[in-house]
Length: 88
Image (cartoon, rainbow, N blue to C red):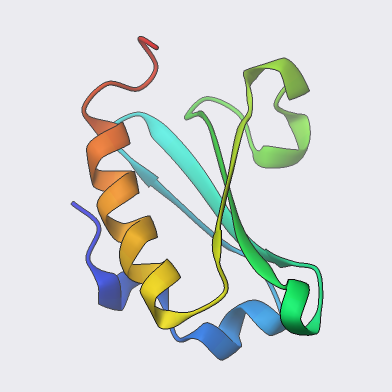
């Protein structure tokens, strides 16, 4: 289970992405865009290979607001997706 505290503070994403895994699913959270167009991008992929070596066709991309609310949404999203990944 991912908790909100596990996803770090919002300023963390201005410097680097966060990676983690949950129930056979790996995830990568990064900031995309700048200023008012900034978003948090979540990429889900199988837990067998690192992000850079995972085939692009096996990656699933999702966008969330670049805000504390966005991080709360990501927390719920990751926990829900872990229940069904990779069967989708």
